[in-house]
Length: 267
Image (tube, rainbow, N blue to C red; front, side, top):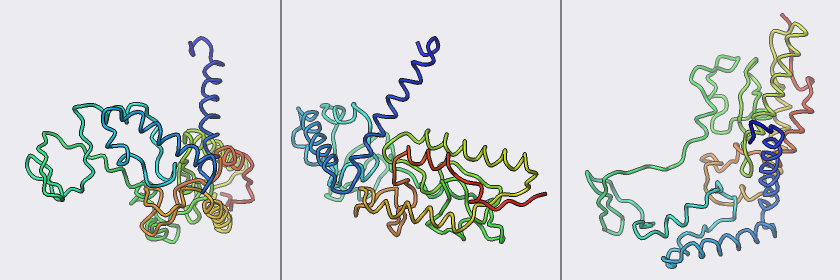
């Protein structure tokens, strides 16, 4: 149908986007909407565990909704309720040739182990072949707290752009809208350079600092800043990954970004 009616596809996408964007309102610290969502999710988990009510308490998170990555899936809890599925929350002591030994002394024989331990988002921000303009490796300059303007421009790295960089990843909606906004901004800069004979562009450091401060100040009022571990944070507990406001705000900021935020050098 979408092939025949492109407008329907666009409206369908817009509907999904606006629904997810509305969820941003429940990610405020101690928000009433967040509390209602928490209550609703607890009832949903209890409803799914018809055969294993003893698992309900184990499955209910001890942190606010949205503090960690939200799973959008209707099969997860029903799968745990199946007779041939066991949920084990005891810590692992060691893995042997054909079994997993738990800290309580029990041993579970296994044929296959699938590790779903998450990922290190910080590694995606660095490359061993990228250096600061002073010759220092990128990682040495930024450490565990990389910073970028609009998640795409890094001071000290002229003519370098990235997508979904620091402080531009979302915790409530699809990042596609962030990528599209960043691409629009980057293309606009490149066209300006082409049309005006510019050889180099670099974002100003004070612009980056102002952007990061604005994002961090607003982050203090969101559930992502709650005192719980997540891949959103580095080892010091700093939230350097997420954009703290609505994606609509980010789209607007990319659209309104000014060339005065950059240093241009002619050929």
